[in-house]
Amino acid sequence: MTRRSLSLFGNALFVFYCTAVGVYLLLRPWSARHLGIPASGFFRGFVSGLGLLHLAAGWSDLRVLSRGLGGPPSESG
Image: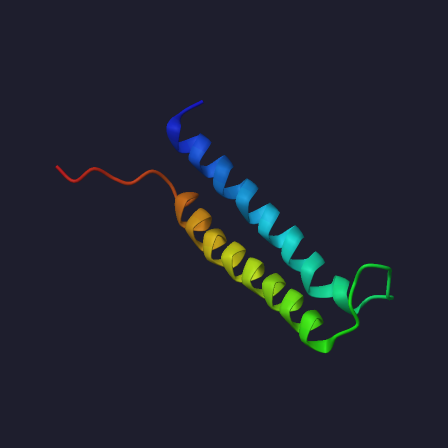
């Protein structure tokens, strides 16, 4: 594998991680209450905010990934 393909694979994996964790953290505090999750609105908002940060990081890296998939840079001679 080339260095470029490894970099793109790493970016794709990071986008997947950020999306999965972001959605989980965004929705989990508002689902049915379970033991160990405080009922505080502040805590729920904090955890949901962390989910939004993960989604923003994933979106940012997805933009980098889409630019990388555009093709190899042309060499100007």
